Length: 95
Length: 108
Image (cartoon, rainbow over all chains, first blue to last red; front, side):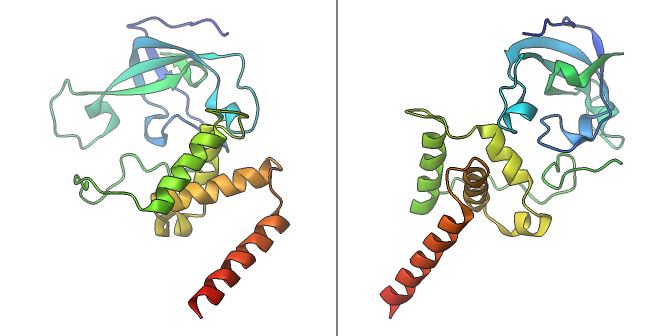
């Protein structure tokens, strides 16, 4: 199992990458900066499981919080409205 | 090269969300049950939900738009069974022909 390298409150950037294959990180969130809300646990990597491999070692999965107004340039809701996305550690970098 | 997968449409303009409940027809229930069994709830695990998603995402954009939810599932499950060698394309082709013939003869 890969050890968690982020803790709640840490600022993280989602990697800007568009590899082929089955990717759980949504297109719209790649390149965005948010903060770790919680560690959800560690799980086999879906990108590998999709290719008939074990997905091991398990990777930490986080719930990451983003501000809606930063994700959507034309967002008209509240300034503090947030969006939470579950993202694996290998898709995150310190920000 | 930056390329959004066709299925990965979060944030794109879309129509209204259909909020009413709807029932499933018999074949859709069967496809769902097939996936549960292949996932190894009992007996051998034949595929993962991640393979289901990968092969749903591999459906061409036009076909993806035309297919219903469970049509995508059954297409993906079939593709996965071929990839894993559970069935061969020849067996599949012969079986599809057999079913078509049965339908035709039954209707005559």
